[in-house]
Amino acid sequence: MKWMLKLQERISGLAPWDAQKITDEWFRAHFEYAADVVHQWMDGVLDMRTARFLNFGCGDGITDLSLVLRHGATAIHGVDIRREYAKLPRIAREQLGMARLPSALTFETIRPGASLAGKRALVDGIMSWSTFEHVQRDQLAPILADLHACLRPGGYFFLQIEPLFYSPYGSHLRRYDEVPWHHLLASEDELWQVIQNHDGPIDAAEVDFGFADFGVDGYKRFVFKEYQALNRLTADELVAFAQEAGFRLERQERRNVEREIPALLLESYPREWVLNNEIMLLLRKE
Ligand SMILES: C[S@@+](CC[C@H](N)C(=O)[O-])C[C@H]1O[C@@H](n2cnc3c(N)ncnc32)[C@H](O)[C@@H]1O
Image (cartoon, rainbow, N blue to C red; front, side, top):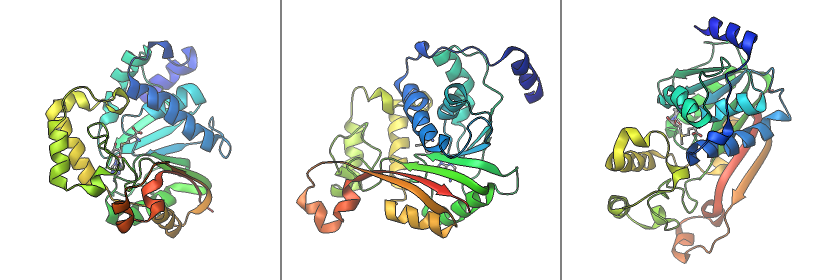
């Protein structure tokens, strides 16, 4: 019961937690790095303590938990088409020794493309981390328009994508394949062979909490399907979609890799696409 949890928090505060207990590198990357970046971009424009947030594509909710515990957020509603956030109580217990999640966090499973506008009060801020490259291309415009409608006038939307599709590891397959731009150079069959043949450990920071559900081979199939479903958005396209939906671009940062580009690639793709690995946008609703 949410009200009992709120009452308990008012009386005795949030459940104790201890970041020294963190052992999982995926958890650490989200609890520390991702949450800090979101905070850096949002803190200057919104008051974290009073703002109501929506996290679009919240995944397991670790970043949201950190924004509450480490950055003082008091209301974050996470939505996602999967239910990874259902693991958060266990994850918080294991990684932080935290007995119960803060009442500031709420989560919801949605159908892909389902409209959120009008279902809840307008929010002050929206964030989305490594999610928009996974949204089906024909749903990009309606989803961005819907998120625009969820935001109060004057509210902000922080949107991050990394890695962008045409960058060296834009396939999201790096945990199995270290060859840069391999997805732009090899056939799908060849890529799948590389993944199938992969044996041994994968980078712990790249292994999410879904791994245990899938097992080694199931996870390979899952990750490859995710690759096939990527919408191949470029940074320019993302900005155009956001502006088309009515957002004003307040600030943007594009991060590029420094690498020698195989000559063959430049015959097919612009240099700026293949070097641009990450985009961060701060969008505003006027
Ligand atoms: C790479 S994960 C990132 C999750 C989380 N933001 C994080 O940093 O761990 C991408 C997430 O986007 C979600 N997603 C994909 N398409 C979506 C859609 N149309 N609506 C909402 N979430 C979506 C996926 O279920 C997945 O949880």
